[in-house]
Length: 320
Ligand code: AVJ
Image 1: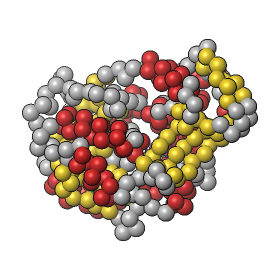
Image 2: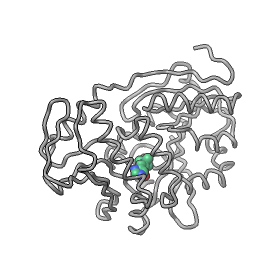
Image 3: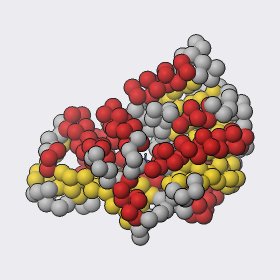
Image 4: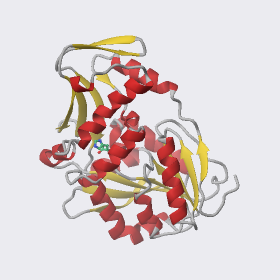
């Protein structure tokens, strides 16, 4: 694909829309009803998530950005000049800017499921960093995928910030990291942000902000189902609930049914009882040793870890 300076190439892998319907219908039929959190990120969901990242209570984003800014030069040394940077779930591609200020990669490949959002972010980034070849890949990174051609021989570094690894069950996280290892190849590395275990009060505040943005983000999933899957969820009939489960080491987000009610999605009807929940997200937290063990079980060696003074967040550099 010929690429103009200052313009991104766009590779659309067409992440299957059919699976949204299947995943929602099968998730709603389970006794603990659940929907995978990747479906939060439609246009409105992506915007709400950006707003979450700016909330005073949501410490992960600003803490990680501070770490990237403060230790960017060190991180760049581990990543290496001239390597191909591959980001999993690039969203608005804000954090990569901090790295791009510290090193010049051979190319930057943002991978994201949110097509329009990815397109706009890649375009802006290409305008701001005309010297970096940008190949945006619209894909679901939780499914097996290959990189666009031409990058096989180059040294690669993965970038997986934001503690999105926490959305996976630990066993799924191990499988995901194993797949990433195969995709990046021997000699490559992974720079990954991981939210640390901490006092429940801080975690609960981060997922129950005062402005209700996280609640709107959670409820937007129902709106999306109504719009895209012929659903009739009553948004006033459900309430946001988020709580740190210290036994499992994860923050759980649910939507609680406020009454007995029937909901129809794609011509299938589901009976909710008052108080029953729809589980929409897990956000696992790992202390440093726990995460290093997980990474090592996927074939990565821990090279370095950076944390803030308050021990809120960690950034690991892992090598293959
Ligand atoms: C993007 C998955 C890292 O778990 O903290 C933020 C998503 N959910 N507030 C997280 C999220 C509610 C976020 N991750």
